[in-house]
Image (cartoon, rainbow, N blue to C red; front, side):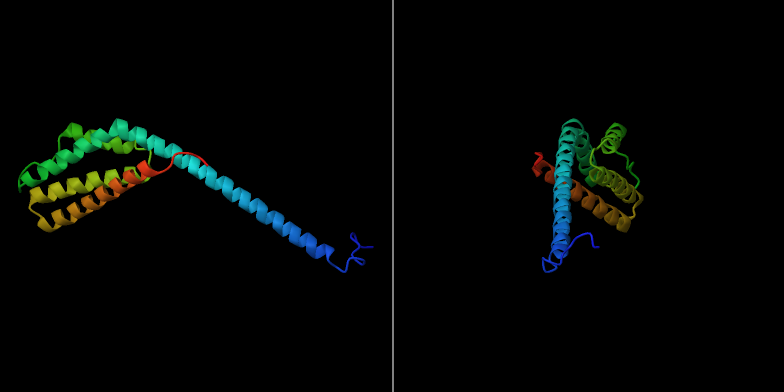
Length: 159
């Protein structure tokens, strides 16, 4: 004897049960997806707030380093000391190290490294390497600025 007697319903009970089960699975998937998106928005908002705090406490170190690098670049000549003021360089490294956004931290580290390579190449008289390193520095700088600008415009409210 079958568990469900479908002889008087024309065989629609089992297909309807299958359809109901599929709808339930779809509903659970939609709810799970919405909860995941809500959690991601909340985390992004928290990360944006952390980045905003980082910018207010450590952003000046990055700005001072940029001013030092870009301000002294035109005066670099072969044989000159390529180093930036050690305190500024350490502050930039520390700012990158504690940056709450791993992508931005990587860009700042890459910017610092490529700037050093460019400065070293200029003072060594290696013009092609200086151009290549400065192009890498410029890319890192533009990407970092875009990333920081995007974080300023992200909504921080969780939906």
